[in-house]
Length: 85
Image 1: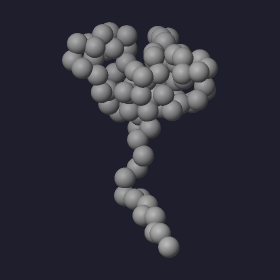
Image 2: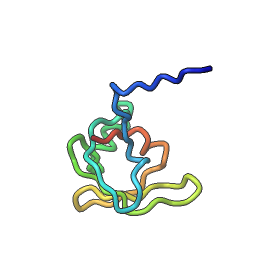
Image 3: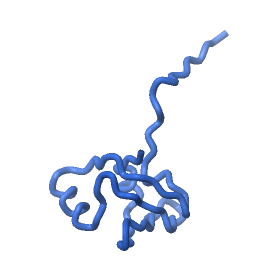
């Protein structure tokens, strides 16, 4: 008999890549290196801003998001580096 332990103390982090079209969330943290983070900030991706998923391309393609009045596409691997509250 095996016992499976489930850790209920930690809430599973949600990432921008987890959002489905029509869903939204608030950006909690960005896990980019300093140079790329400045570029991301310039596009409007900042902590405590609301982000909405508009579309997701099939087969691991880019994700289309809206932040304020700005719409942009992010690679799925980049969207995984954006944590949501």
